[in-house]
Length: 508
Image 1 (tube, rainbow, N blue to C red):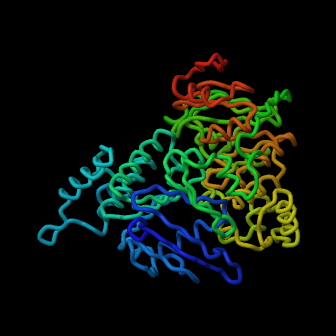
Image 2 (cartoon, rainbow, N blue to C red):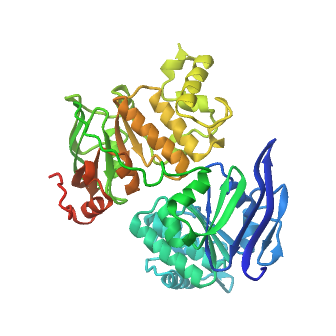
Image 3 (cartoon, helix red, strand yellow):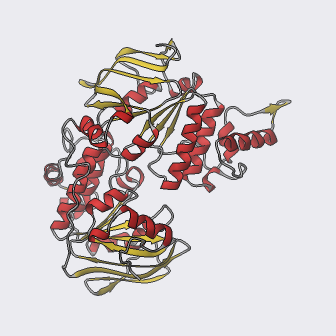
């Protein structure tokens, strides 16, 4: 068994203060396999990975790597023995060249001087072996997320990693970029390198992984061959009960006939937005689909006044408006949940109560002095309303799971009683249970007359929740789908060709 498995973790336990977060967990990975680690937020996945990579110490249990028992005290030690971790947020240096990032700390020297020609040539050869032909002398940040991740993978190959951990590595990639990444994963597998793959996107799990280990509430649920599971069975094991109401739920279409709330016409900005139109009725959920770079987030930022438009008009309730700052948009009843909750959403060292009230201080303060009792009361109201899992209003938001952090951000805006809320990738990087709760909440608030613009890279999410889907392509409208027209094939056809090939109608 020692030969077959590159990694064997046995009886791993971990507590923080008096709370036990891992309960004698076993986890193992074969050489040259792609293995998924699955579980809801709070299941213990991150803690287990941090113990494996030396960031956390374990309270109990043993770890065998490549047949030897290991005791790591930091991430650098894990790299030295052949464990490489690629996170959702790239941890390389954007200002340095691609080649410099690949060879940083391992520079080739000649007569004591760094041989940049050799570094550039070998970096190019290494990337070409992974199927990527790019200019390695250009700064890393001049390329998109996918290329940056390929550079991180190339570095893993360079340091002769025996196990590569990919933690939500696909969350910022479009479908074509994911295909490239999966091709590289298959090449790593062919080289005998094991890949620990963490993703909340179920189709990816079934496409690329050989086996799956499921955790729930810090306990091992089981280890399975991916091919032996259905999607519903996997989700059921993750959440601990039948997943019929989460996976494959029947879509209930609505015909929203309320009055028009928002109209946006011919929005243009730089090279990203080249003339986009949009209308939203009160209580309507309108989805915004398109590939990365299509202009979805840029369009939302212009509507909310974060970025300036070059031309175009915005009307609310039939009256023209001009939002030079987000504060003006907020005064008109608009709210915006950014796709990057860690950078533009949460304030990590503040409490849940402080994070909820931060955008609506007038409600909890008087003469510039915060009424902490009111602040707590507002937080408690929304903790109950949208079922935020927390120890209390004074818990720091950074200690919540991703799904609960997202709920706090939603609570922040809902406490302001908005008329219109923009949700940019609201379920990215959160588990299926929390995803369902947030989707239920989106439908609930639309039922209260709040209009919703839902931006999502997951077609299934748009299909499940939207009354209408507007597809963007190259900064322009590609078409509009309503009701039963909202299918994956139709969305993909509009993205690819600007037309529906299955007989559905499209907007001009």
